[in-house]
Length: 544
Image (cartoon, rainbow, N blue to C red; front, side):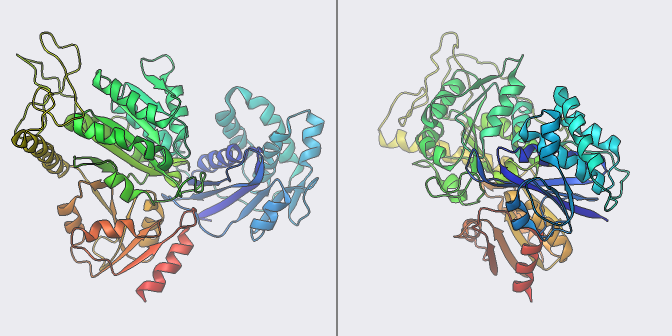
């Protein structure tokens, strides 16, 4: 068995995410690469929650339609996912065929909390799948830490109550750490040298705030949770002006409130990194599901004309490295820089092989000399950046059109000069990005048919591209648009198929601005990610 998929389901409040992470950890210890999808409604209790853990010998970043093993904590899980080959369930509350164990009775006998039924079921899963007991215990110790011993006792009760039904092969590969995109973004921002993170919790960016709070313990890193998103962006810009490297996190509705602050960043040339985690809209939409529907919004947010950098990583490894680069580039060019994410990247754990020591340029340390002009009109449009106090000078920033000293101006020539300075800085940013790998090519690199995508569709497009012998061209940097790199990646392509998770073809519209026209577009608006099987069927339907 080169791969397998396990689904565990129940109601909100029954620890489905934690249970999924434990199964994912077990699969990693068996030597597989792992990807986990977690589906949950916007409810604290009730509803149907489930996690699908897919394990494979090679790199994966998507799930498939077929489930091999189902672990059910309620009847609804059996009803929805009953096509699985093997069912493992709590026979005290579920009627079904397969391997039933009295999980509720065991919990009652052990005097444990009802939420711990999931640990009992996972013990039974390991017995049914032929997972060695030692791997189960190692996984529990890794996942539960100080609470491991009680969970080990419950898991062993489930293990001994079950029966072996199949044998999952053990691979020789060493386990890789499981990392969500949000965890990778947080680590990358720290690697990039941020001094502060400011955020109001908004799914699916909230866990970045939680991770940052943990990382900040015992360090100078400042983590602030203000009262709303307007406070977030204004506090962040104030911190940036004072000399702190700062990032913020939000989703679509919160980012709407930040757009005036984005324009302030652009005009005042106060750098900030903005993590914008997309979810379905408009308005509240579906808070706990995913979308790529805010690409155009982020590309154009804010009034007036000013340069920005928009990055859309597609894997935890890219999320880590590009988040660190985002900090460096935001301060190098004194611009708002965006990390565009979504639930499918941000919240779904995957086996990750990050390089904590990857090369990153050092911050500029040119000393201030003479009278400081905050907006000195340099050949590349980038002025020397200082934070107060600067001896003998005033560090003045201004949201109005201003001269080199930051004094408000409305004179025609001075206004034109200030505008041209920003545009010249944008050109310098574009030239700088030519030295970065802004495009990633997967699949068959000389195939005449290419899938064009961005962000979290990376894994599913790569796998389908390999299965169908297609070229997969993924844009990591979307603004400034990497025109030369994109043109080179398209060399020899005869047919382009856009894959994106929105209704109006926002990536398609972006590449049309530069003269490229896709032959077909495949979209999704369900809030759920493409599965490998679904995307493969749809692509086959357009390349016949």
